[in-house]
Image (tube, rainbow, N blue to C red; front, side, top):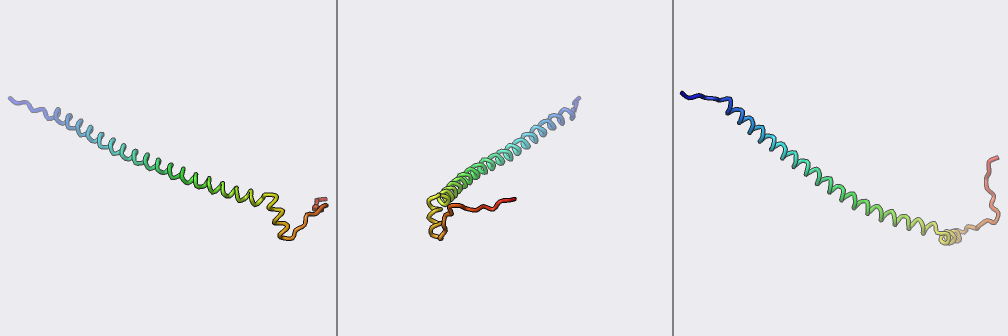
Length: 95
């Protein structure tokens, strides 16, 4: 007499299907997270490059500002525009 036990066979199939599905989902999640990590790394590198560019622009602007506000260049500009330094300036005050 042959005894058929179908329930034992289905438990093993369920286990292997669940194991395979878990591996597939895990690998897809790993690939997704790795792509996000790589995108973030490239984003950080791009931001570092833009920071360096902004720092150089800031240094150039500071250089221009300091050369413009140099007292010698301001006196030369005042002379060119015909301005005269007053010895006793009168300031507006609040009474």
